[in-house]
Image (tube, rainbow, N blue to C red; front, side, top):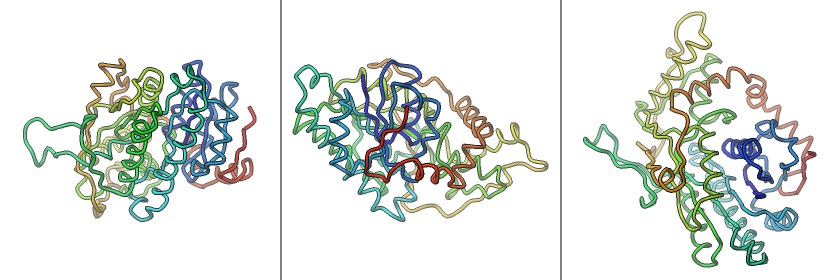
Length: 367
């Protein structure tokens, strides 16, 4: 297959591309606008592959998308391009509306126009895979508030988004399903739990804690740190996504989770303990840097995914436990200081600006 991956320079997108090039015979067209969190250094290990090419394109640019489809003739789309940070969506929701809703609409229309012109065989084989989040479901009962067995998110859980980010992703999910129902576009949707692992932009909890701890900065924890998330190692997620686009049933939704429910404070304390072991301070513990801060508005209390459908129907299971995945993650950040420093300083942005044209125009990277 030739797969067009949007957002391929981002955290999850880059893991998907590394998996496809490293473990399959498929080709990849990486489509990314290279906004602040997009970093081509995250796919440096595969950039010389003859099965990979890069196009700097904004998914809100319909003309550029049409040209991409005409040029590359993909067999499938994996749509990961999105604004994805809850805190930033609260302070500046406009970018989330533009990218996550309008961008998804433009991509759907470009894909539909391209798909409708294919011959019958290729039409039947084509797939549009939309990658979403468990945050569209809102939150679940917390063990501090309810005894006994606690519910999990399933593919039938009603949507109840809490933040501008999750609302924009919920809207994009609905658009994808509407294009399936109304126009017949062969779509699939996946909703995942919190990802972690290598190459994660340091605005999210786990990389932020690791890098702030090493810099001697406070480690902020919202409220009491009792919010619960299900954690999924990003390389396990990448395997799952490729399994869905190649073997999933058109029109279906698949929830992907890591079976690792952890309180945020437990995650931070575990990271501190790993750093105490792997990069000890001259005195004291990294736990001394934990600082409790005012909780953010509308903070969801608990997320937890039932990934049973992925296991039963597609044979996928996570390979990493939270303990093994978190240890690998800390080791990666300790061993990749050059990537970290470029991201923290913004130096990689200067390289991108000098090598690639402005977002919204096509430019294929040298192979």
